[in-house]
Amino acid sequence: MRIFISYCCFLLFAITAAAQESPNFSGTYALTALKGEHKAKTLPKNTLKVTHNADSLEIVESFEDGKSLTRKYALNGGESKNLTSGGVPTTDRVEVKGKTLIIRSTYGSRAGVTIHETEKWELSADSKTLRIRDQTQVEGAPMLDDTLNEIYQRK
Image 1 (cartoon, rainbow, N blue to C red):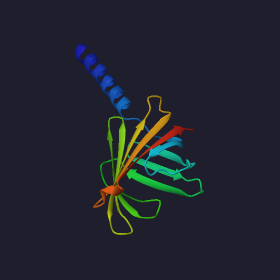
Image 2: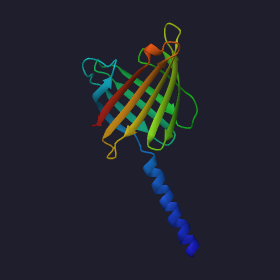
Image 3: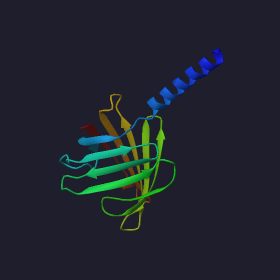
Image 4: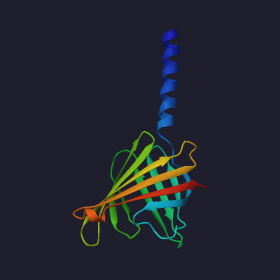
């Protein structure tokens, strides 16, 4: 009986710890700050609507001009195919490491140069603030590499 109770306590602890390590990013967020060398001069009124479940992640990014971009990702480690805001096809992979969601995308520029983009998503402890660190690397042109830090507030 003691072994059974100990086993149940262990399972409860393991499930609770796993739930705390992998936050659910679902929600609607408004962009509140941008930090980076190549950021916009005025803060755009962008929003993110995120649907996150065990198998997939869907992000609908709405821009102040009324346009939107929907991206869908598999969370099983496989490849996903999406488009950039400029309509360029991407190949993407998503992984969750602890409390961080990482989206890695590769696409070609119109000039034929390969671009690698890595987004690292983190939620604040109260789940009200979403921070996204977006690193862009341009193959063969390191002077064009860029890092942009985006801060969103849950609506």
